Amino acid sequence: MPKNGVSGRAGGGNASCAELEVLKSRGLRIGEHVDIFTEYPFDSIYPGLITIGDYVTISSDVKILAHDASMGYITDGACKIGRVDIGSHVFIGHGAIILCNTRIGDYAVIGAGSVVTGDVPARTVYAGNPARYIKSIDEFAAQNIKAMDTYAQFTRPWREWQNLDEEEWRDVRNVLKENYGYVIRKK
Image 1 (cartoon, rainbow, N blue to C red):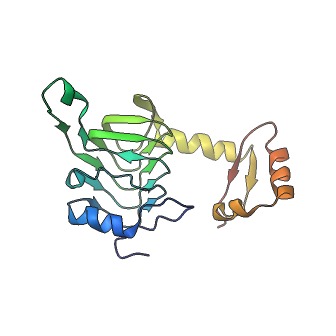
Image 2 (cartoon, one colour):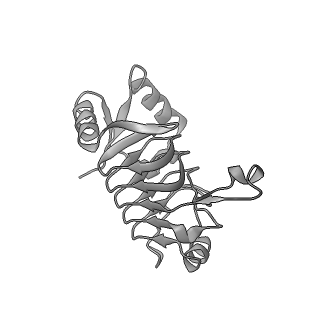
Image 3 (cartoon, rainbow, N blue to C red):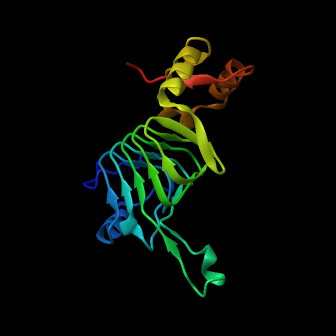
């Protein structure tokens, strides 16, 4: 594990430790055990306005912005800036955009493709554009735990899926022909 606590464990395009060290030297605050699966997710102009808690997952193609220069053309160059505070144990789905002046509470889930601005309370699931409340984290957990008893389960570790051969993929596609399934961590 790098000394900055960021593991970034996934396929190509992860934030580099060198980039993170530069942004941290410019004020980015990032906790321990943060998994970053995308290249350059953080606002490079205002990194000092961004705080990331511990045990956060930042999926691929996520952007976290602490500024909004869109009004610059009509205001003679003004730029809105605001803090982005992301709590601990947060999951940010693929392609989400976190805009300036956003607070995301602990144990929150942000759905793929969401555009988030404002406050996301702790222990909630938000998704959409603009992101809106979907359900509590407790409802989300109960729904998926119940579904795991009904739908297919795969125990192969997720990091190994990229190495499946054609026959294995065919078998998985057949199992998932009518519905989804779950990749389960071995206990």
